[in-house]
Image (cartoon, rainbow, N blue to C red; front, side):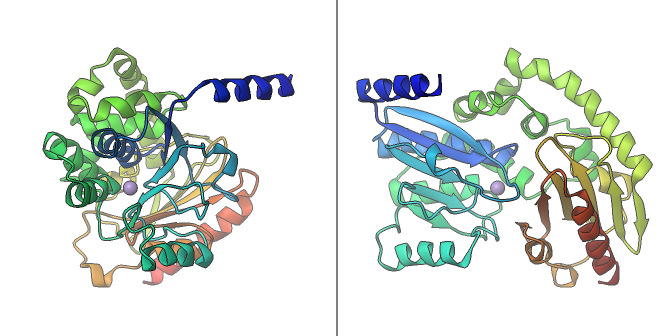
Length: 343
Ligand SMILES: [Mn+2]
């Protein structure tokens, strides 16, 4: 059966002369979906070497992140996700502080920049709030790409990825279309949803994307789940010395609005949450985006998460453990909570 299927695939590959560009993007992430969409439009308008675009979501998990076999023979692009030293990787854009899984990966990237061979193909800048804005600026400056029709998308990618919401209230009550789309992207368990959204995000307004029937039908049930998560976290969260901690591993979830803790406890500075989904136990560590504390008084969250094999940004990060390693995850939570309470 397997052989037949492989054979059928090979025959298909030989028949087709289409040039594929496969875009690997940070899955379950608004910026990841916007990055994939913007990259696709830039490639279609300015690079013009692909007949067909394919989309493949990537998530952080314990162990290997990339399956070498997923790369295609045409062009492969990774956006808003960690670097791969694979010779099959054509394009790479990332803005995460923890962009390299290993020092070898970083050396490989730096060698391509130093000899100039990859300088117009692989781009890393952790100063960008969103990967979408990194791709937009890079495409405009280096390739003459017109970003004018996409300014609203870029603005919202920055707001969402940079957690630059006006208030915890606006982030949790989600009146704006970008926030409802974020909720849908972060919590959908349908692997086909984001690949359907990606081509639309650079073609129509966010409101228009939200109004699509296949999107709209997801809103009400997710709002109900969102309110249930709000109540669950309300019942579990404890606050001590400015650090919120909660454990909802007994109620597996594919994601929750990460501003709920600050909505419930606006005076807290940090939040450490332990949750569980089908494929991982996740420790989420965050800084209250509305804290009055200045950045020099805040702890670097990426540095903490990296010590446990996770990563992220200065203000927010995460660590993934295999689903059956809850004990290790719980130990990490206790240590991180203690460290943040002392900070
Ligand atoms: Mn991002």
